[in-house]
Image (cartoon, rainbow, N blue to C red; front, top):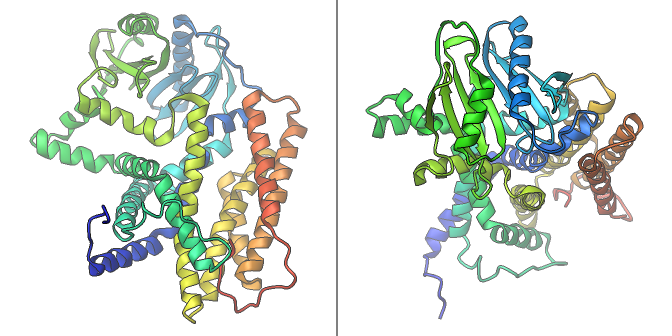
Length: 496
């Protein structure tokens, strides 16, 4: 007797129809969010690949160097206009450097590498490729909060797809290791889609839920304010994020940052500093936040808040606070894989690729099913092939452009993707896939070679990026199987 609860065929059909409709409606955006998120896991390594000459930290950074980096970025930023916040990253959180950043009131910002011994600003950060990838995943390069909200909605869509997929396939766990290769393309694609969905199910659930939470946090705070704080949104924000800076007339001086950092370290059992922030610097309502490492916790840092006089206010509770606060604070690390070091990053990379393949497979199954029923859709097949492989081409072109061209990677990416759609006019889906994969492989090798020509000596992590580029090119090249004849232009089956 089956242990799976009996589900009516009507319910299963309804779930499958909803699953298919939702997947087709958001397929392109889901694919873009999944593949960019997979790459963004390695954003620190990409930054090192882009600027291998940045001064690296060996050992722990002193409180004096951290405080001086804050003073240095404060002095530099004053010439740039009204400043909203200053911040300093110690190693581990954002890479093996001491970095300082300011955000202007108008949204502009700059980031600098600082001397780890003195805190002096020595090199302006210029990592356009990493910045492009991060913004693509976070907000799709859309203005204002709209992009982040849209990405949050993609998290909701992905979570809905995971749940509806489980409900529409009652045998999905029973058939978890059933793979039908070499026969019908539709069955092959369906098995791959379903198997990867099951094998990476915990990851899919975590990523979709945390992505929805991070993207739609504004709505969650509004609901929290209404439900628990009588509509007081400021109180809800403070409960989740800690004390907030207040605006006011200019104050005489910045707080004594070195004393504040030393006090926070003492409260954190002497652990290393990860991050220091100063909101509304130089104003009466300025607020300091210091994150101290908590190595045994998932969040990996506790935050301590101080007012403009250096008086301790409170602890946020990321690591040792109430269960609800700890859960909220874990959303970011769980979503981006910033815990557990390189092994977790590599695991997230493979699981992210699984999510990407699942996103692609849904449309491929739909196209092959239409072809099997005698209703091929060759135009949609070419569009989807251009979307999938054109995105990869765009990433490769952006990587090469970041080395060779003084052009924003977003523009290079858009141009390459547009070129893929132009090629879709001349080629059928199968041939288009082969052409785009071949071009992508060649450009990836060119990007790796161009970087070595400019920077022959790279740190180990940057070598990892170079090797990854060449390995991806090799996989793409090997995937272009020789064929004896071109596929008919009437073919509607997208390439694998």
